[in-house]
Amino acid sequence: MAEFSGSGARRVVIAGGSGFLGLSLARHLAALGYDVTLLSRRPPRPSGPWKHVVWDARTAGEWRRELEGAWGVVNLAGRNVDCIKTPDHQDEILRSRVEATCALGAALRGIDSPPPVWVQMSSAHIYGDPPEVMCTEDSAFGYGLAPFVARAWEDAFHASVLPSQRAVILRTSFVLGRDQGAGAGALSRLGKLAKLGLGGTIGPGTQGLSWIHERDLNRLFARALDEPAMIGVYIASSPNPVSSKVFMRELRRAVGMPIGLPTSEWMVRFGARWFLRTDPELALYGRYVVSTRLQEEQFEFEFPELGEALDDLLRAAPQRPGTSSPPSRVSNARTMRGGVVSGSSATLPSA
Image (tube, rainbow, N blue to C red):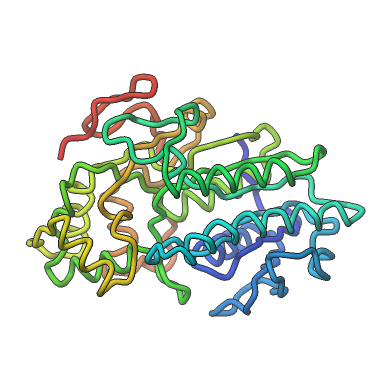
């Protein structure tokens, strides 16, 4: 499958683009030659090679002019889930996603030349937290707040996308990224804990942890924007998910800390709420997901293995000037380190 080569500027609008994921994607697209416009309530920090336009993520205001004649629109808008799930926060998590998506749909219907492609962020948490089942694009949805929010988000997208548009949904797993001024998601926090010797097994340690390097996620978004054959739902996750125990072990190795104190479930619940101010279930539960569609379409991950992804992001030694990213590797989305996928179930990676 071809990826955009950067020949000739194309304008892409990223809704909700002021956070870690949005700015990472904006830099990637700008480097490929796209003209990037970010829609957000506040100007992104730091500044970069993009245009910023204010929107309220609820109504189709003057910002809709940015969509006129654009090559594509990417929707990332939604409140961060890294928080304590109070009733108000739960409501914000849901409403921020649904309202922003509906606002984009209303704006698209109010312009003459809408972008031909809409790429929509979703969550791999839509499958819930099955302890052993390997989920693919065709797996059943789960139960609970996160699957409910993800379904509502995708429903809003299907109701808002235009019949003339190519529609792509990326159900994204835990994104591993580098802090370039806008944070680096949960990896930054976990890395700091690991350096303090607190990066041991979390809870049972068997919970699934599906992940993707930010560069591979950015490449998937770019591919979705430029590849006419890419349509429908895809899982955006490495072909090699691991258990939480394995993830923490690899994290300790990457930061150079040989020991890590284990954290029992009650300690996680107490510490997450009163010290980290986040939802303990983000650490105590998880899922194993892989994309059969990307495997069938022969998408090549640059970082199919967790160890090399963490080394790239966390090792102190910077990349030498003049060197490029690691060469692409062909990875089989049905083959996992420690287990082989068969349909929607698998022998899971050993802890």
